[in-house]
Length: 84
Image (cartoon, rainbow, N blue to C red):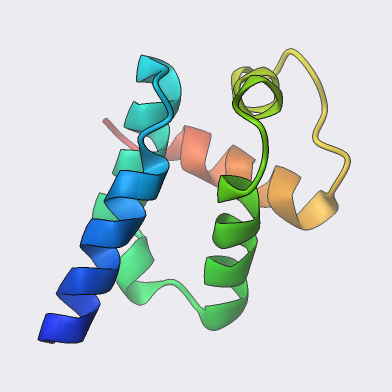
């Protein structure tokens, strides 16, 4: 991993800190297991998710509400399926 990639990953980790353990773990798992090989389109969808309010993210991630955006919903489903 290049120094630039490492810096970007550190910044993303900071942005993924949501103050809710569940979200922190989900997003951290995604960064650890998928971000490095994720296609550009998927990365863009993930960055869109990070712009979403925490309460909405939590409801969508826990399955209490359906995410209205199909790409984001698909990515959230994938993130939830990642092994611990």
